[in-house]
Image (cartoon, rainbow, N blue to C red):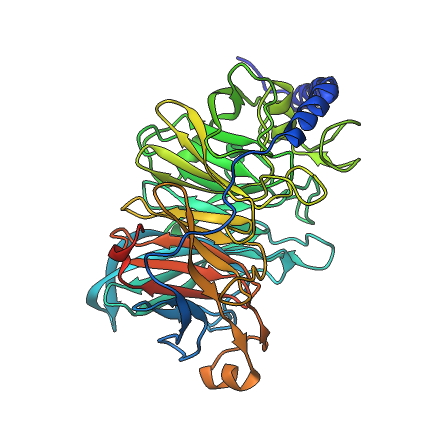
Length: 511
């Protein structure tokens, strides 16, 4: 019988780290040459949006509060719910910093113990750092993460009745950090991602930077990390329903890999990902360490995948000469191993969404800025064909008007793409305010919705809310997702923390 020796594993991990550093260091000159070639090119990009077939935007009153929180086309309406500070079903105040979200199922709604129609179940992330912990059925870390505060991130679970009314609001996961995005599974759960890269331990010995599975029945959420999916600055995940393979993005500027997890257990149910598997990173065929931080519309690459032996490996300080980052920055353990085997890099991997055999993947800062710095552009959308294993640039923004740092992404049942901007105010013909961006079938962008949140203390009091007054128009949209029939678009505004359900004549346009 083979006996596992922890000391031997420590030595092996140390050897892996040393090999990764050595391989990375030898590639510095190659990457410098690639950077010069990229600066000399002028790739095709989108510089401006096309007119929206849904029509121009104008302020529309929220059906819940009467406040003009959004600008939308004529004929569209919305209803807000689950504001930061609202009382949840258990009496806790709703946490702030709403982020990734998805509809994970349909269930029988009940009122006073009796059936009351059907409702959708949504699970929503909260991108909170060190703060008071969310008290939830699934708890991971109850220790102090900075010597004073607990891990304040986690998830809440919401319900939306098919008739158009919001229902329940309850906590589901707590004791995690910086839960940014994630993704739904084909078996009806939510994978919540910690967007944090740290080798520190909390006062209870827990590390962070993992993925957690959240059940639509909150009481079934365990709070156990899925360590096989790697420890790095996770952004989002999407599952191929045909193969059960989980695809993952990494948000770590100019040192972000594209990953997939091949599970040992492909039965597709809550807990099956805990049974281990292989974490792999994407590599461009015939091109070692391909640099995707600058892209042109139509760029296409064939991919293969390299195994990452130690998904839970600590971070590694980048060697001198690693391109396009500051001296002394740390590479995640999975990325360092992948890079040493020739894997590709993106600028900042953000949203990912599965649709009809393809993965739609966002790199929020593809391109260059005015100073010519790589990975400081306005962003791009890549499409990974899962059958051909080819990656192609569908959309590349060359100007803030076309799209300003898209982040989360969703695709409707009709194949329409919606992007959540994370680029601040983004001034345009409708004034300042972050936007929801739509894409046509040809990869052209158009303005779908605009953040219009400006709240006075009087408005807040009249609406019965607990947020602070202020101008929140530069706050990002996040967590966009559709109901299964693509009749309602759900989305969050991160600050002050509001969820809205948008309805309208979607058939008029490409969504």
